[in-house]
Amino acid sequence: MQHDGDRYAIAGRDPGQDDGDDRHSAQGRDQDDSPEARRPNRMFGRGHYGSRVDRMDASGSGRVTDEQFRRNAILARLPESELAALRPRLEHSGLKRPAYAPGKPIADVFFPLTSVFSLVAVADGRIAVEVATAGHEGMVGLPAYLGATSSPQAAFCQIPGDTVRIGVSEFRQALILDGVLHALMNRFTQATMVQVAQNVVCNRSHATEARMARWLATTHDRVGRDEFPLTQAFLAQMLGVHRPTASQTARRIQDRGLIRYRRGRITIADRAGLERAACDCYRIVKAEFDDLRRQPR
Image 1 (cartoon, rainbow, N blue to C red):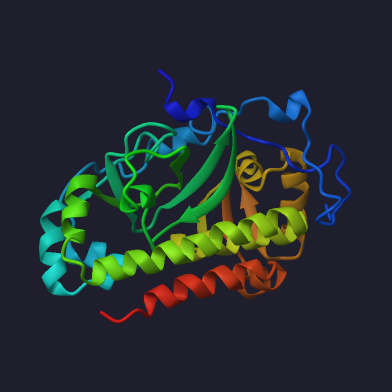
Image 2: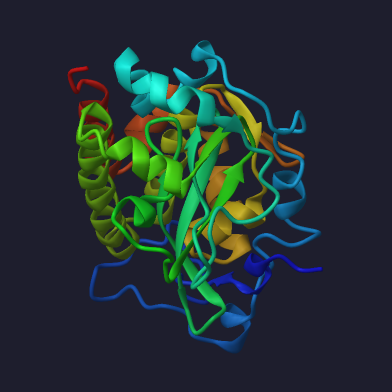
């Protein structure tokens, strides 16, 4: 049985010929609209990254300890009075499906602890482009916070790890207090809007190598460890390029000593160098989420 996400694909956005560094101006960067580029790829399905996601959090559901949920920036900033309302309702999530799918009811919101999620916009029912990512700095389910019951977009786990969830109705009950959680969610919404807008500029204007360095640095921030699972096919999808372009770009970054890649796992070898290789979009978005962590309790 296919997941809802099986029919989504990333639209190829780099030209048919790789020029070595994929530098194009905002006017000259054309999307590859060939049938091959538009052929669906199974983002969540068997034989691709979905098989890894299905194994996420094999421990299953269970209550969450204070130490565990304080890995999440939003939960960690809550005062005890608000934590008391959430604590009994937070549980581990063994996520084996998209967090939410286009047009489907959103049942839960998720707070990543060590996992990373992709938020993708879908066109024509099968072409998807990553517009944002979310990790321990925030949450997944922003449409539900804003009052929507569903979304035309999708969210799924891209890097396996620990995640906690709470039902939408229980989450909204906690917001009635109009306390710190409400203020943090407003600030997270602002930071996410900046991230989405900056992604538009980045995807249109910056070279593939700089965008890949930015994506890897951001993911490294969120997983909290130097090594994590990542296939080149999945990375190509997230960047909206063909797999050969992603492979060549990753090889150049590896040749510079910034990463090590082997058998579907990547290791960040030179964090400072990776940040220098990333475009300025990395620093702009990071500053927004760093500000969220500094919000008073």
